[in-house]
Length: 332
Ligand SMILES: [Zn+2]
Ligand SMILES: [Zn+2]
Image (cartoon, rainbow, N blue to C red; front, side, top):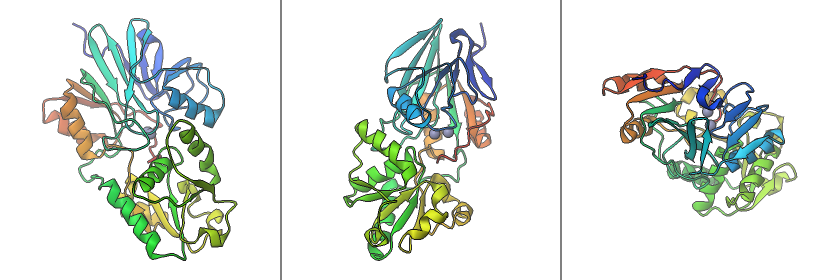
């Protein structure tokens, strides 16, 4: 009998499926790519053809311009040679998908990036039992345990309400994290206009066009200092400390990221109010997902793989690190 998973090839630049002549999240342009989600380290420009969910394709087109692609809705199956591919929700950002590959009775799930907790801006992760689960491990260390998201959002609102003459400037990645944070604020009853940096406008509009309610968003560029007092302003992390923020009224600098768990990272960015909000699975989510899916083998694409591989081996699950390159996960 052939070795499990002998029909897929991990390469440093992505996972190749020869029988389907397709790459998954390749870091270089290829003739045919299956793309899990719209973050730049997974969705590159320049492929011959892209197969992705309609939302991911729309995100890629917003960022890169027209793509020669085929939208594959959640649950829909495409046949590529003697392989079938199905996209199921990954709970990471709008449109994010795990790719379920099947060939001759063997099932391999490529998770892409994922998380298990609720996110009002995207469909929840759907567990698919499989023979091989190919996972990320961005936060694959037992020290990474993300706190309750609602409690982090409450801390943001408390800082805002305690400082009515200042504003809270929140750094958040422009795809996914920003929209999730806005939606979480709305769920907690914050209905004031939220001011956004120009670099976030197109993706926020796209989310709203695709049916995600973000409430009233206003361009921060056009707003006066007076208007911004007592308000939340959002910008990409890179804009937190640049000239752009100097015109804001005495901002309380916040940042929403799983990395805010690491004090040194918060200090590097002069973040006064670190908010630990992540779009990736933490250690408990990674290990409970492996237990739930009960694969025969676990392959780890990127991140901190050693602890997770060790955790599997002590539980008689075969595991290996693929050490794919180019997946930064600065996106968190
Ligand atoms: Zn991602
Ligand atoms: Zn990633």
